[in-house]
Image (cartoon, rainbow, N blue to C red):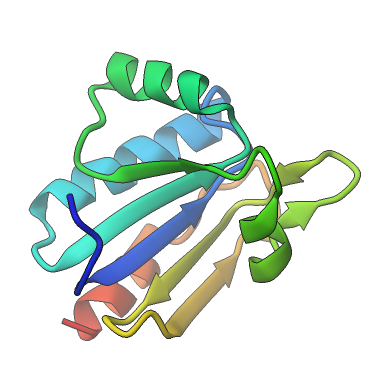
Length: 127
C-alpha cells in the first residue's frame, strides 16, 4: 500500500513479539483493511526480519511495518525512544495528507493498549 497522498496512522510499539503490541498491531492492521484513504504504519525497533516473520504469522498485510532499529531516528524525532531500554514507547500519531501531525496519543502505561477509537476518529476526520 502506497502511503503517498493519504492520511496516516503511525502506531509506535516496543516490540511486535509482546502481547499488547501484538494486539495493537493486529487491531490497526484490521482497521487498515477497511479504511480507504488511510495508511497505517507500525514502527518498532524489531529487526526487519523479525517484523516480516511476525507479519507472516499474523497474516498482517494491510499496513506498513517499519523498523527503527538502526538509528532510532523515529524514536528521537517523535519522542518515543525509551533511552534506558532502547525501545519505543507505545504511542499513536495521526498525520494529514500533507504529513502534518494532527493527533498525538502517548500511552502513559506501556502495558495498556491505546485508545483506538480516538485515533481512528482523528484519522477519519481528516478524510
